[in-house]
Length: 198
Image (cartoon, rainbow, N blue to C red; front, side):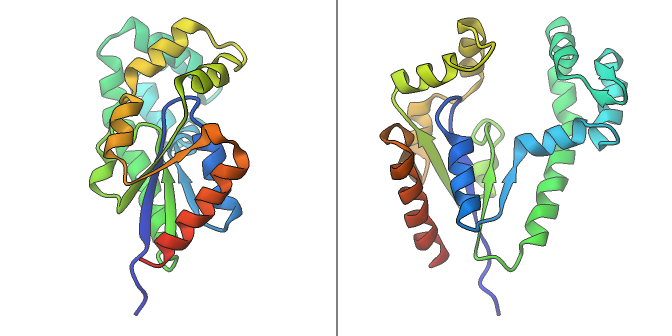
């Protein structure tokens, strides 16, 4: 009988290198489920999320898909809207994640890339959590280099996320991405070997 798949959660605050780290897992052959990509898929034309959003925020629908900019504006205009959206979208995202896990039931290790991992209580069903982190200076430089990024947007995003120090304390594993790509990739490969042996 096959050993149960080890489900690793991957998270980190904005600008900490989570997407790059997820890519290293994929390059090493580890299946990765991406929460953001799942939501994006749900919001595209024909996606299950479109119908759900249309009921709650009709102005956010453009050409049969969710217009994220219009949705953000709708959320700003109606303080209670975000909670109502989460109530209908989270079950759809959960179903997509379960499909992914069912597809990879024979894998020794899978990773779930979840930006708001602690904020949504995902650590309750994961076998372990890896946080990617870096110094505040490195984080700020990465984020402010992004096109269209403003200090206000950066601060707003940070305010919605569990502080980095708390994530470091709660996580089972940590990779400092501020030490460079080669270091981060080597750490990923080392962790994969350890977790596949569990």
